[in-house]
Length: 166
Image (cartoon, rainbow, N blue to C red; front, side, top):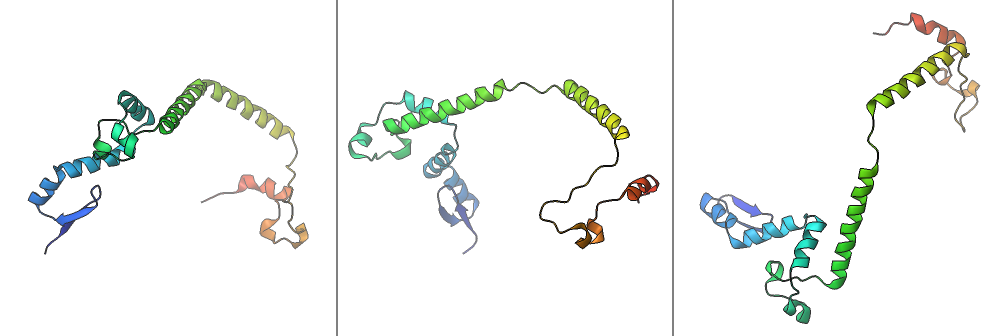
């Protein structure tokens, strides 16, 4: 029978050859299905502007169904759906405005502050004594811990200058 081609947009399969595939990809059914798929990912403001420009579909309002479906040139949105869409668009616009109000980061000022902090750390480190280590709460006493978990002693810290890695 040969290989079969499955179209994800149309949810159907057919024999895979050049003629059949070209016929399917250029078909109206496939074009509509593909458009419907990509419409799911459109921006809310784009959908709102398009829906506001359309008139209401009378058949859809009366019966709740329309023979033309998504390809209808009239709007099938209810007033509640339009209000929800407007709220989403407004919320998105407000988020964009808030994001624009955040002041830009200046690298030079950050580098200056970092240099100041480093210089104060170096000054205080040379003056201060050895650091004091505290065990996390809930740990057993120091005598019960294995040697690998003991904090370094003053003699261990002094010998780190002679240490070679590699």
